[in-house]
Image (cartoon, rainbow, N blue to C red; front, side):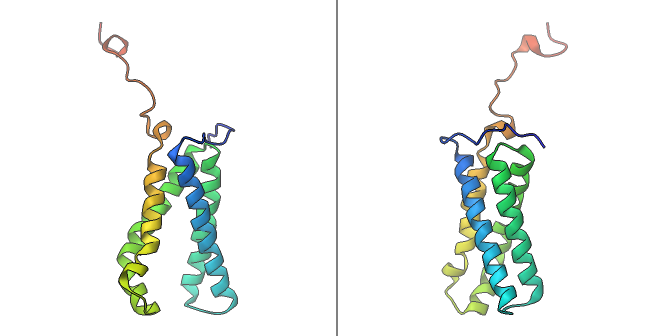
Length: 140
């Protein structure tokens, strides 16, 4: 795992994405823990909420300290949750008896977090300048 050993700079949108991932992960963990204690909801859902929440929180914290591996995994988890909750919104609406827009709010939160995390120029290789023609192999 490669880390810079320093927290991401304050002007980095990825820093805000990491904080959002930590908060969303903590909320999922608390929700799953509540359902485990009070026996609410199906058992696979309760376990999944705790595991995904704990993974999102942990990886968001690790990515906050500059880990490319942590950043990649938390971005993938948040993107997966965006799609899963978007297509699951009608089921959430029916189960919780709430409007569809309210059922789609968790998906929106994950989508915003995914976009913020995706703006990482160091991890995507866009922070470095491209070599000019003279530095390329086979060019003179």
